[in-house]
Length: 322
Image (cartoon, rainbow, N blue to C red; front, top):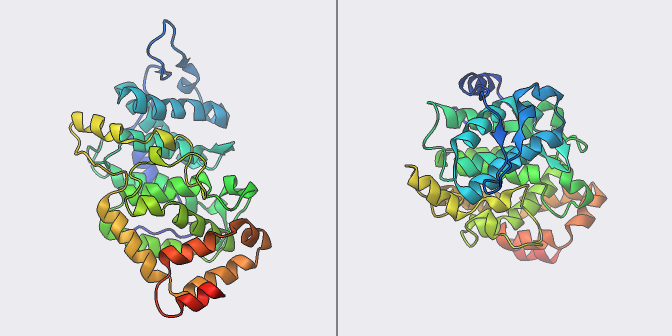
């Protein structure tokens, strides 16, 4: 694939979306809930109709069932077929939110079905198409005014607490780290870091601190993030993403990974981030964040934690003392 970059305004790729939709048509039978033990099982009959008429909450529910059901009971052709259809159908609606973003549900469902990477792709080029659609939703034009985020459109969960990472950001960062070829990780991260929006920089700093234990391999799967962690970097249904998913995928013929994020991608990310943040760059980020007092106040001691984890080179002690 061509270099994969995050550039504000360059979101879901129309050609990739068209290919997803062409390959994954609507299943003929309704999808059922992730409850297989009772006499009666809820069926999502409304999905057989016009999805554009369904509210966000009515779409989140079946997507949550796919993630939780696959996590609890293993993969099922029914959920596989419905998810891939919904992926193409709903990617343009990813920024709709009912408490949480639809994007978070789409990412969790994708990861539950492809826990070891998209190796058993439904068609040639599927992984690239997923990256160019779901992996670029956060860059959709509706989310940006130039190089600044539209605060009411993106990073929604952080609005009440900028000191935790919004679920749409966390889900998207982990999605790209999980599925990008390792050679693409550093160019992509450089494009992420180049976005100058103060809100964006504050959220990235929060995410880099909260996700550090996963980047260095201390935490292997999202299910292992402790409840109440600060800063929080989880997203909707990320707690269902656990090592048993990879084991079940291995039984189906996939290669099995023992970590959620590939080791090479994690190493590339840490190398890139630590090389990028000189004391001068760190100071520049802090100056940008200070232009929005609510951001500086919400971050609290997170910049100090970030400094210890990522900032390298001469002058670090002076920056820390400042």
